[in-house]
Image (cartoon, one colour):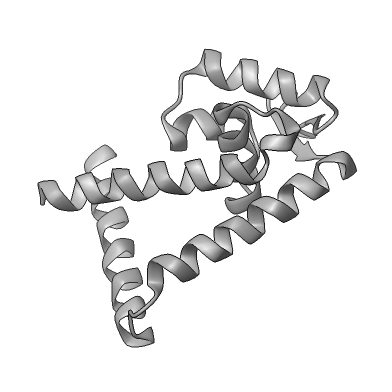
Length: 141
């Protein structure tokens, strides 16, 4: 089990490194890239609170990263219609080239990671990981 967790951490680290490298021309920090990836890959989750909760990054780092992305013109903030305390983060048109590069890097990483693994085994892996998430959610609640 320990090697599984270590391997998962390695995969996440390599994934983030790969994504960070493809957008290096934009002078984004690693945490800014994490925020953009989260917003891109986890719709409808779109608040700083969601990023903190699911990526396990401190509120301060997420706030700093989001503020920087807003200042750079890559994110806009929209208050929730029902609860004005909730702020929804949305990438801007200026962010589209970054998101395109990140999506391409994600797809290439996924294809590289899954090379040589049959579609049947990939489906099994997905089923197992979904069950693990369900188990973890039961542990948390």
